[in-house]
Each structure stands twice: as structure tokens, then as C-alpha cells.
Image (cartoon, rainbow, N blue to C red):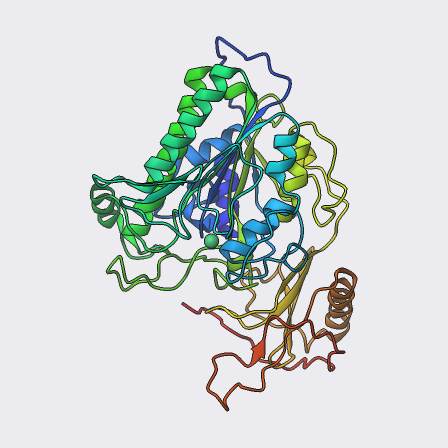
Length: 478
Ligand SMILES: [Ca+2]
């Protein structure tokens, strides 16, 4: 918890911050909302959380002037399913987008549709990474797939445009967001902007001057060793600053809620495009990264600045999960809860009172698929305890997160009763929500297919007793 503690100290240092008064406070019943989504951005690369190399003064302002969450999670540690969960407020196996492959059913309910139906002008700008025509947005300006950083192609309300002259995507997306807000302010309509950056996902590409600056800052002892990645984070931060400056200039900063989050933890592999031989980032003190259900994969930054509602500089330690985003956005907008999105809670009360508690004592995760950092796995996180169940070899891992936040000491054999209790809860949850299990892939080895388990099965046969003596996996993998 060292990094979080440093961050908390920094943030609390601004507890007495009082936002500057503005001349005009728009007469609008509902707040405008800007939801800035960063990609593959571990909280460790944000200085409010205590980063060694990165400097993010603009993102940090959201923490200084609002609430910063020290225990925010995503249900899936991968781009597309994580975003689909946020949009729908439903687990992946329920909304149908279970991994990066396959389509997404846009006909189902989502937060932009609900906001749109209740008078918001809604915009999607940037990366959506979900196939099909986005629904629920009055305006969309979308990167194809992952998109490109330099001279990107964008689809603006169905029309493609190719940008030139070394246009950098993070700058361009921000310009489009500001242009959209300008139109809504003129029309005096409440707006919702989902500004989903491609940054800081691979390929790691940044501006030359920023790279030079961060390369000069690299030194022994830093967890982060990738100057290009740090430069990308800086560009993202600069553009968060542009959004905040525009709101202030227009007198809308007091009537606009700004949310910042990431879709999964930092990517800990290498990136060829940048020409660097070091990992893109490092999620120390947490284990592993993007793709895994270890803390480095599922724990993400979350900040919510809600002027007039969130006390400045507050730290919320209550565990939240971005499955909560749909109900939370409705709560911020003053709208009733969605009755068919019951997998998440409205965490807006925590923004008002960060010491409040939710009526939830466990979070559940289910990823019956493969990624570089994981094999098919489920997990339960219940306060100080976490249990992971791996399906390939049927072993479980048990960690005391308070004593062992880096998940290095598997206590499953030492504390079999605790492991059995959590395993039973995890299995009961899977059964209650109809979460499918993977099944053995008979073609594995015989046909040299890559995976031993088929992830898309509806197979739900009973599971064999757990192997409490299984190996501790992936420690320090990079
Ligand atoms: Ca991602």
C-alpha cells in the first residue's frame, strides 16, 4: 500500500483547497458529465497515487478538488469486455461481450441511452472497441478498433475522415470533445461526454520533446523505466488540463462532473513500436498487470470531481467496481436506478461522503479465457481476503491482502477452512448469475492449438475438489 499511502498524503495535503468562484453558474437542473476513460492506465502512472516518474498535475486536480478512490476495480482486465460492463452495468457473460473477440449487442440498455432518454445530449469520442454502430449517442467520433496515434482516421457520425500533418490522437479527441461542448453550451442543453482515449495503450508513441524530457528523468531505483510511456501519460494529462481549462473559461466547471478512470491495469509487456526493451510499465507494488485477475490487472484509478457535492481532496477506501458506473451516472444525473442492471451499485453517495460504506462485502471476477498474464480464472475479493480459482489445473490461491497486497504468499494450504468458505461463495455466485465455465479442449496438444481449455463453452458440470497445494503463479512476471 506504499504507493497509495503516498498518494493519500499528497491528496490530503490539499484538503483545504477551495475552488475559485466563477462569475457565471449556469442555471441547469442536472449537472453536465464528462467521463474520461484512459486505456491500460495503471494508477501507478498517476502522481496523485504516488508515481515516481510520471507527473500528472491535471489529473491530480480531480483528486484535489474531488474524491479519489484507493480501491477501484474492473470486472475484466481487458479493453472491450471491461468497457461493455461499464456501458451496461452487467457482467460480461450477461451483456455478451466476454473477451476482445466477437460482437457486441448494442440493442441492450446502456448508460448513454438512459442519459439520452432523460434529456442529455450525449457524445462518444475516441475508442469504443465494440463492433457495430454505437447506440445512445447524439454525436460520435470514433477511432476504428484501437485506432492510431499519429494521423488517425475517425468516423464522425458515420463519415470517415483521415487526419494529416502529424495530428496526435490524444490532442485531436480533446478538440472534438471541446467542440461538442461548445455546441451544447450555446444551445443550453445538459451534456454527457464519454471521452475514451486510445492512450496509453500500445503502440507506445509520444511527442519527441516529451520523450526527451522523461528520458532525462530516468534514473536507478524508479519502478517506471519507459520514457516514451511517461511522455504518453503526459500528453493525456495535458489534455485533461485542456478540458478543465475550457470548463472554467466557460463558467461550467461548477456545474460539470468530471470522472477519470481506466479500463484495466497497466500493460507489463514490451512494445516493439517504441524501440525500448523495457516493460511498458510496472504496477508495483501490485502483482502482474493487464489481463490478470491479480491486483495489478484489476485495480484501476478512479477520481470523481463533483463541484458543490464532493468535498475537496477526499480519499475513499471503500471497494468499488466499474460495473457500478451505469447506476452511478444515473445517480449523479439525479435519475432513478435502472431496474435491469443489478450487477452494480450507485456509488455517488461515496462521492458525497467518502467514509460511507456500501451494502456489499465482496466483489466477484470471472474471466474463463486466456491472455499473456492469465489462464481461465475466477476470483472473489472479500475485504482483506482474496481467492482465485484457476480452471486449467483446478488449483486455488488465497491471499490476505492487508498483510500481502502483492499476492506473494498463497495461504490456501495453511488456511483450508478460509479457502473453502471463499471458494464456496465464489461458486455460489457463479451459479447464481449463470457464469459459464470453460471446458477441456480435446484438440490441445493433438493439433497444437494454443489453449488447453475452450473458453466459450456453456459447460456447467460440477467442479472437482480444489487442489489446495497448487503453485503460486506469475510472481514478478514481466
Ligand atoms: Ca485497455
